[in-house]
Image 1 (cartoon, rainbow, N blue to C red):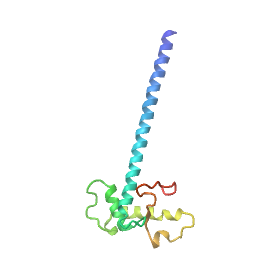
Image 2: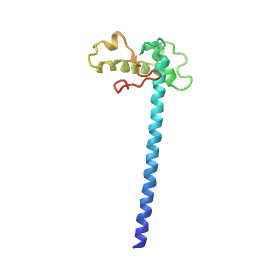
Image 3: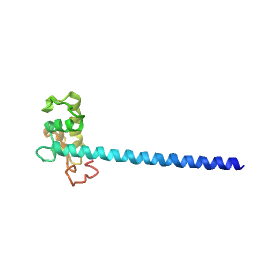
Image 4: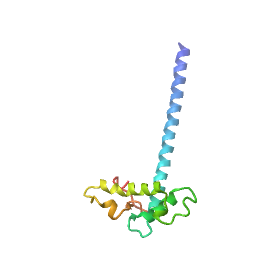
Length: 130
């Protein structure tokens, strides 16, 4: 009986260690995600050359180059220079405006852009901006 009690106690200790390791892993992952989100916000801010809170197609080139690995798409200067998959990503992101209340059905065709409101230094994005 004493042996069984010791085994149960050891099992509880092992479970506590595993739980602590899992909690630590979650914290590390959450911090890494926060760093990635902050990096993305910084890239959106920096890509918006004219600081109009809109990342247009040509500014999206800069955003993609910042977000990519060093030297990513070095010959891309304009939106048309981007690979089709990157152009498609921009269009999808620009058309998220259709989900905003009261948005014009032409919002992603007449002035396609990614709204970067909330990404400027010192700003905290609202949930819809995230």
